[in-house]
Image (spheres, rainbow, N blue to C red):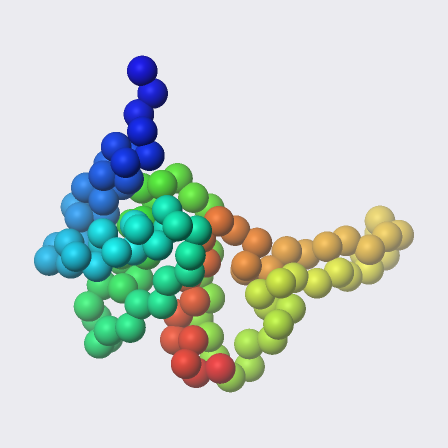
Length: 112
């Protein structure tokens, strides 16, 4: 018998709670947003486990994750990728950007 989405969601929540202690309510809200296909913006004081929580979610769900540290010099192509000509291959090759993943952690996004 296969597990339901609800059972799978609770398994993920329990795994994340192993890495992040004392944030049960926000963990459940994040899981709800993930199930709804939404985006999540987590704001809190530095050092409160936001990055740890995001990485715990991606790992518990088996997702390919990437992290971008936003600075004023981040360009759109850093996120979306770019095409570059490879002389040795004599053709253009796409180089994927950071957003080409299942789970993107955009850290310090207010800096850009």
